[in-house]
Length: 241
Length: 245
Image (tube, rainbow over all chains, first blue to last red; front, side, top):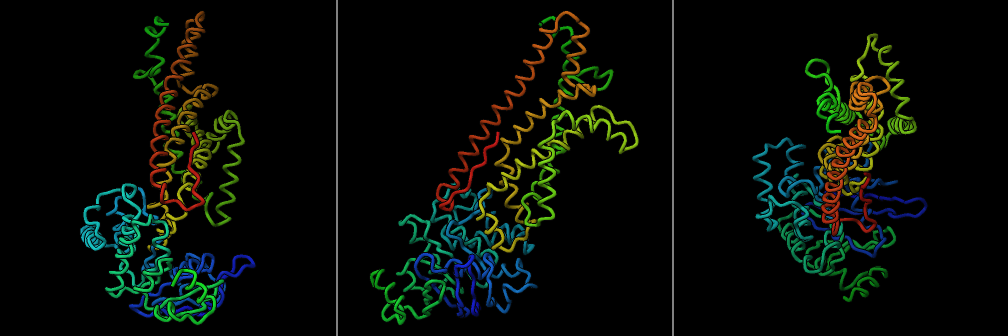
């Protein structure tokens, strides 16, 4: 579903991504981890072209994301994106946050968009929050609305950039639960996170990044029990596995 | 003063209306509000050009804004007074000239207010809109501008206040507004300039002071809402809050 081929990018002379290659298959969950500054956020943002790349190719559902002729707005409908800071639209109710894009971009009728948003909110455990304004929600609720908003466009892939990093500890669980359910439902996902317990449980593959390189791609068992790359070994040791 | 008001109050308020064109304080307010409303679309376009990623839009917009912000308003009035009839090939009334000149002049100020409103909306908002597949116009019209305009409401009221004060300069081209009416009353009475111009000063003050208070209340409310919205929502760097009254 997502194919990365030798993706490279540098900010000035500092390389942030160096020849990253990898595949996220349909229905798979890939968790990207690594220390701060290892390039994981840049990588996931490059997948829907929130970041440009200098070299290489990223192909999502058969479309070259960074190619010149690509209709990026159409392409992005296939890619839900969840931000660390939620970035809900503060001037709209929870319901309208979710219905905005389907109505305006897919031309969906209001009634249908509302029905769908309500179903999504129910899945997120927020059925009673439809009329609420974003600022009245807790962080965990905001992030679940953000996930619902991303799913509103019925994307083929969901990209999550540190979805729990801005949350208070007691709210992390509710967001991870939602992501876990999505994984069980077969959603293709790429997720940058520091939640290693969650990674171990949900990921099909773990990508470990170090200094802009994808140095290890392994199943969670392999990664946590017997990482091959010395950097990955240090990392796993440092987080206490 | 009471006598003057009793005698000439109606004239100061509406001019010769309904027996002649509308004038006085009502004309002042009408010119100011019309000026602001008509500036608004021009200002939005200027502001969008000013923050555009295309240099051929950004540079001319920046030049226009810089030019008018460096011009004394009185001079722009003279230019409008002589240039508009020449351009249109027919005489233009004082009222219309004043509104047109205000639009030309104030669009630049209003554009700067709207620009800072746009820049005050976090980058996360446009990224969120893009990530859903929205294009430039959808992002602007549905996500960025509603927030930007709401946040710059107090500053826009500030502009309305300066426009109200600027309309008094219409006097020099004989626009029938409040100051003009009061000068007429003054020449009629001959011996009471202090009283007449006290009435004028107090009226301007009450009108503008009330608007300042509304702007302040609005500003406080918006700031409060913004801090609430961004308290756990802003990136570590934080976005600058917009205050420009």
